[in-house]
Image (cartoon, rainbow, N blue to C red):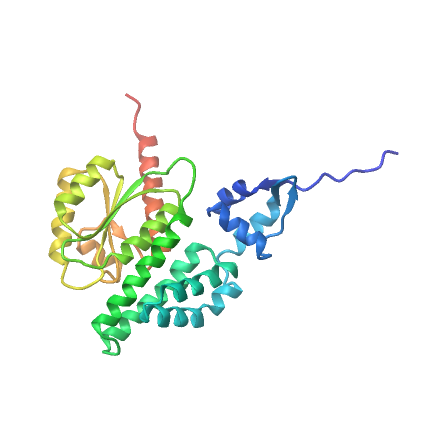
Length: 290
């Protein structure tokens, strides 16, 4: 009788695993280096078992050791931000990355909680305006350093335009959401803070954006939102999403003219934008062929 041979497990490359997980290939390499993902080298190339990649993907929504530790880490990051200590702040970020966190987790589970606490302390009078500005400036530098890690090779899924409406001076939320969308494979045009309605229209038209996100962090900008929505409805065919800290629920978003609510955080924004893109694709397929 011929001896039975067991087929070797199916494997994939570093870049293939990154595509399957929806992350940057350097994130997969960090998973390997920190022991979060098993792999072996075939010559100069890393090979990873498909079942291990799928197992990691299935566990992605469950709290990890890094995530459960992040409360204290966010507090340490906040103190470094308030001190204006970019090097110290980056050390906190690097520590999280080395422990297995990916850039998305750093944004949403580390930096975002620190910024929320910063705003709360400022509102309660525990921090001065100078403290808040110094911390925000340092946070901007961290986001800029993390930005390239969200770059994703290959064909883009569509173009999204995002900016804060006229009078809204907070642009960090715009930066964070823009990077999350880039990491999800979208091409993103950022307009930053205090953007007039006319600029939204011009940029949307020139970029052929299928979706526009209007960011509203503070109160008192309802008129600017409605003016921008009206201009976009009149002069473009883009879907419009209104979101941010000043838009706490779906009824508020719809009242401001949004097609739907973006959700509570950047993860939900990505999910909402993806849903809009899929709906548009389905609508095109239903159209009769001329």
